[in-house]
Image (cartoon, rainbow, N blue to C red):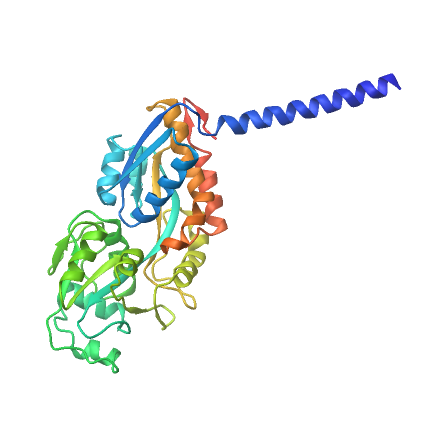
Length: 355
C-alpha cells in the first residue's frame, strides 16, 4: 500500500509540475509590468478600430503605451522599413521583392469595404453604379451626373445636369490600392492600373480617408472612394455596386463578411491574397483585409517591447475582435484568426519564438 501511495503521489507531483511549467510558458508570453512605449502607424482604413483597440488594451495593461499615426499605408510601410515604427498598418500587402528584402510578415487584423460616396444635392441613398461606369467617372470619361450611362442604371432618380467632381487620395494609400485593384479586376475599361497611388487624370486630391470624407462633404456634386466607416460615420451616401453575380449590393457588415468568408481559403495559400470582386450571393465586391506588418525577427528592439508588440497583436485578433462590429468592421473569420496565430508563432527574438 505504501508503494501505491508513493506512486500516486509521484504522479500527482509530476502532473502539478507539468501544469506549473505550462503556466510558466503561458505567463512568459504575457505583457510584463515594465513600462513599454510602442510607436506604430500607417493605414487610415483601420484607424478607427485600431484607436479603439489601443484604448481598451491600455486599460488592461496601463504600463504599455501604444501610439498609432494615421499616415497612410505607404508611409506606414516606409517607416517600418526604417524601423521608425515598431509595427505598421497597411491595406496594401508587400510585394515579393519587399518580403525578401525585409522579412516582414502580414497579420490580418480586420477587414472592411471601400465605398463610392457621393454628394448630390437632393439625392440621398439609392444610387447604383457598375464597375465600368465607376471606371469612366474616375478616369474622366463620364463628366456629368445625368450622363445616359448613369441615368439608365438609375431611372428612379432625377440626376442633375451638373459636372462630376472626382475626389481621390493625394497620399500613398492602401484604400487607393484596394479601389484600383477592384477596378483593374472588374472593368476592362480601367486603364490606370492598381497601386497605392496612380496617375489620376482628374479630381481633387486629399490625404487620408478623413480628408477625402471632408472634401466630399464640402463639395456639391462630388464623388470619391472611402473606407465604409468614414462614409457611414459622416452620413455621406454611398452607392450600391454591381457584383460578379449581377447583383447591386450595398456595403454592410453582412455583405463585407460574405466577401471575407468567400476569400478565406485564398488567404490560406497566400495571406496577401485579394478578396475584391469575388463571386457569391450578397458579396460586396470592394472588400479587403487589412494587415498589421511586423518583422519576423524582433531582435533589433528591446525584449520587453518585442513581447508587447506580439502580445498586443495576438490580443487584437482574439479579444480585440469584440470591438469591431460597433465600428463597422466585421469580425475576422475563424479560419483567418488561425492563419494569424500561426504567423505570430513564427516571430522570434534572438532565435527563439516569442509565443
